[in-house]
Image 1 (cartoon, each protein chain N blue to C red):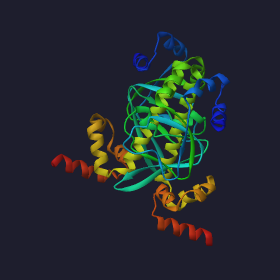
Image 2 (image 1 turned 180 degrees about the horizontal axis):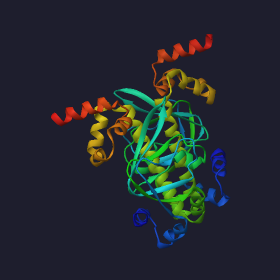
Image 3 (image 1 turned 60 degrees about the vertical axis):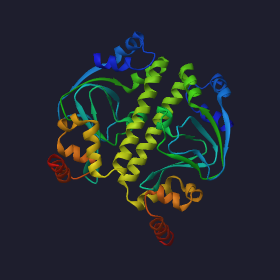
Image 4 (image 1 turned 30 degrees about the horizontal axis):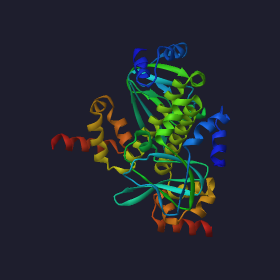
Length: 190
Length: 190
């Protein structure tokens, strides 16, 4: 759980007592590659910090999988709207690699929120971060042509390209796998 | 400022002292129809509660205005990412009607956050709400055909259609004004 502790330490005003307040609620979870942390239609009842591994979130549009996010080690994963509203999730969260998580339940998160300022602040900063990720994704998908989208991933997160199967990457870029293959070949030979 | 006080009262654990803590920081602003609360490229240094009126947020994509949101009375407006990061805004906020606002500065918001749990909680719940608005917008634009987008507005917020000029509504729906006119005519006669 050391990585989660380090993550919390990065927030202002962290003290050991904040960690001790959370500790009884934390639960280690292992999820094998291909298995699900959450399936569409179910309520997201827990939020998890990824100690190791990689997930993707996706939903179905006319039967086609649309990958909306890759969530890797040292970040948080959950179906955020479903967690906040405790209503059925409109997306699934699937492990792309074997994953190790530290999770806590929605109810326990509420207890922490009511306990002190630090946890409310973590919730606020995490929510602000989720907003910025979502806004970036919206502009990324709607404003950039396919080639620029691929180039942006290549520049900002090149190791992701080695970890994510082509079919998921294409679904994230919202292009056909064969178009992505063509872009990659063209860039490799240019 | 009564509407803003009512808005705050809707959050759990509100007390008069929370209102008194904020009061010295609040500033009334009037913005005439067509004028800007914020222009793209400038840093969003304040967040505002809309007591009266209607704004739109928009940005330029290849010279074309893309309206991303209509913000009306009893809601919050700001360029959220710019506010959080105190970096130049990638969108503008323009009044569609004469507007009355209650605003407070970024620095004063930070002071309130550090003061007590209530304000951190307001910040967290507001951030969660902004996230859900952004996620809804993303799915709205990417998953629905033009006609369904218009029908959704018609169903969820029919009064908006009387308040928003056709050209801004078309830019929000990301369709051409002439396509929107065609949809409206078709629906009026069917």
